[in-house]
Length: 386
Image (cartoon, rainbow, N blue to C red; front, side, top):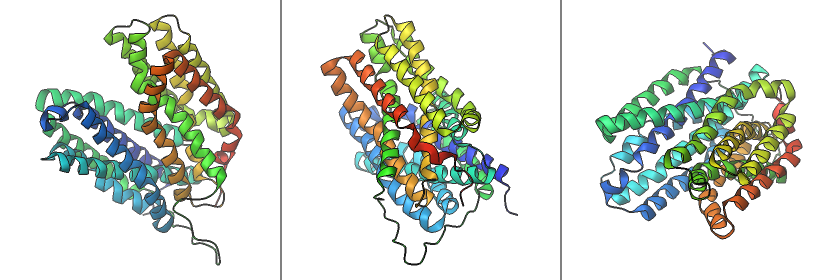
């Protein structure tokens, strides 16, 4: 029997949950890699960069596959491929094999990411309402559970068992979701139409990608540098400094589950404009905060704002006129996630030369630009487009 749109909506949520859980379970595995392979922080940084490059580089390939075969078979294939990835990385017997495993891990996670976002766009059209924000909320929930529970299991029973248990949980989610995914055949190209390029040349699409990047860079900045700013410039202790990203991430997760209702009521453009504007004001407040508690509060408010920006932009990409959802989404996803790669090194360089307060102010300006360009996301509301 064909799944109903509501069943497919639950299956999409399970796929987002599985993807986020995998990344959350991966986070506690990072520190033990150093003694296990006798490497330092610099080599570990290169390994993590390889994971990110693998993810971003494979995203364009997944868009081509979705355009040819549809999102359901592509999502099924890469979701299955993700299941053994964490044990493969943890059990890599040598540094060269670990480096290879990290790149493959990133590529499979990245391709699954694009495919599950494309499937979410198709379910939005079938339901006639937004589900993208809450889908990303399930990703955040999966990351939280995977990180918290994974750290506890690793501390008590070791990294190997933690990786195997995580793979088993992801397998259960994936196998439950697979038969319930929506099967939307790819639309064949019109006679005489130009073939879909791996890298589309549509300037409006690339602008959406740049807007996604401008939203993801502040997210990566708070994650990587928020604690250092709170400790170095505002005198926060280690436990208090950790609250900056914790409150930011918690606020993002909560708002993402409410974000679809906001978007359904007020529309994508107004939701994006208000969200980016709130985040910009909050980061500006963090830049001028006189003490750590106020800065932590500002980071939490920034999380409230940033939460809905990327889901709206991904929906706009999936409904971009003239391109299949997979091709458009892969481009915007690739450019947007490049922000997570660019953020750590770029923000560190700027902060070292200008200071953290000026850095947060500059990131606020990035979000002001997104506010001004919010009208470009109007296609996100075109949920019934054939």
